Image (cartoon, rainbow, N blue to C red; front, side, top):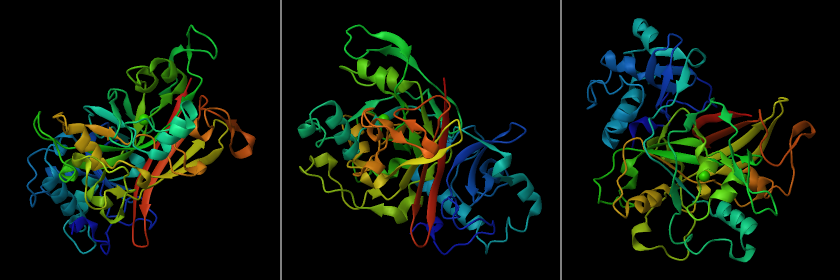
Length: 421
Ligand code: CA
């Protein structure tokens, strides 16, 4: 039992019962104050808590946390500490903010230094992301793409049911929620032509994904098994893998996605620990054909995380255009990590692995405009009569994620970015 997950715990910090960030969540992020001072932090309700200040004031003395891990501009050094320390720190925060604990609750002077209102701070990128890998692990998404672009009767390529397909992405262009996304230009082949033109992308798209952040893995040459994988997964965030379909279509043969993807991806600001999602484990789909030995796993390795996409237009209309769920992943995170390292490839603290577009079985659960407009053949109706096939300039895409049951809600907040022409 993880102490911080105790559903009966109440906090002396007040928050709404529908908050994404109850005391049972305790995510990790980085924020900046009005004075431009950077803090590593967590959040309860709408109160942002400086872990940098808590550390300075000696509140982590009961843990094995090394000195000055939180006196940095990102979480990377904390990620290097490993699962035992991650859990100790999260547990100690749950205890410190427990309604029955007087230590900080009574100390108004310390509270003034440690606590901030969410509206008085700005989140910045929580992790200096080293390597970024994007998988392609939703069966419904892979089937939809296969049906559209290849053979409807053989939508999945021959490798798909045998291994989690992935590619190495670009980490330098991963931005946080709130940063504008520049519409990319590139080489595009007009329909029926043989020579490409250079143009701004006209088929700009989002992809609903979840990303997970890793701790340090094993040495080069060693592998992480599906059984061990959870020890190396720090936490998850929402991930929008922006895609220029027209650039992607011409360039991707034979080495896969390149400039159609690398112009931007965006993440939500708070990393929700894998520990915090414990209540929401769920069994994955039975994998047929049986997978090879190193991809076999035991137990519930999928997570029931509701995902929704809201498209907000320049005119101010907000329409929910998709509702998906992380539970639909065919290949789970443990299998992805086992596959990633089976050749001896090492992973490092601050690497990000994304799920691939997460689509569900029904049309309203499709995780990209490509699928929602079925390759641009159907118009998507928005509120007040606006229509879309792909994204226009000044459109804002908002992805939200949350787990909820009768006892508890653990949310991810949102990743929201606006397209600029
Ligand atoms: Ca993707």
